[in-house]
Amino acid sequence: MHQQPISNEVALRIALAARALPGISVGEVIEGLKSELGDRIDEAGLSKITVTALKTAIGQTYDLDGEEDGEDTTVPLAALKEAVRILWGEIDAAEKTLPPIEPLQDGDIPGSIRIAVASNNKEQLDGHFGSCQRYLIYQLSATEMRLIDIRSALEADLSDDKNAFRVSLIRDCHVLYIVSIGGPAAAKVIKGGLYPMKVTEGGAAREVLAQLQNAIATSPPPWLAKALGVADGTRVKNYKAAATTV
Image (tube, rainbow, N blue to C red):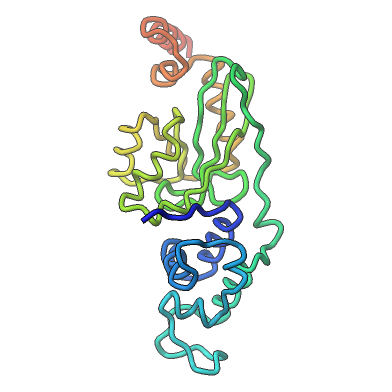
């Protein structure tokens, strides 16, 4: 069955609502909303969701008066109320603000590569490959760094192969930065043509990428030189020459 696309605004509301519901995944929220609204999930539909409808949709039970947690519930009633407010569009401005995108035109930033950064908050590298909310996409050269796209990973939870879906989102990139990644997922990332870079401590995305930018400007290792399109003999020669001067 054809699935209706989810707008960026609706995707953001659902992702934040799921975050407010302990133990409930984004996929479970989407499936619950579909049981209430059908395949078309839009802002008008979300505005009609009530606490009762949401708690039923995600399989929670409460006292009939709706004011006290029931014995069978795992999600606090207060969390459900917060999730409903988010679905209605009452999102804190700080949560809703994402960094501005700078579009890339053909011919812009010669000698550059494309980087995907797993992120959950603003312009931070703070995401696990398999659970991050989005990927920040940068075009990077020795002299320029540009955020060219932000790609939501929300719909990965609806895919039969979540890792393959995530790889498909960033297949046009050369390098993937993550805080963590499992072995099978890493294998799929590499098979997809990306070089995974794990930075367990995370940090501000631009600060982390500045280190890669420095490598491009000085002496990129062979895998990076290959992504930049440097010929085999030249990249190995340059890398060895730089290594002897360290």
